Image (tube, rainbow, N blue to C red):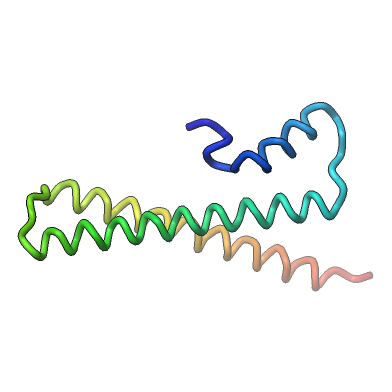
Length: 102
């Protein structure tokens, strides 16, 4: 999967800037990180919606294979679990920074 499809074109431009040794400003880095998180959460949402649609089709008796429904549901589940683990790590890191003496 190409990096542009994961991060989006604007984030890829920021990564190219870092590859050339040019440090992004804190504002640019924050903006890129925020865009990356937004894209990742939207991708998880798309997987959840796709899983719901496949399940609905199966319930209604439409022509859909059970194994495809299960694979789609498992992909959505794994994406959600991975997102929750990343969130937990970010919260732990934030709490660790807060506890640091100044």
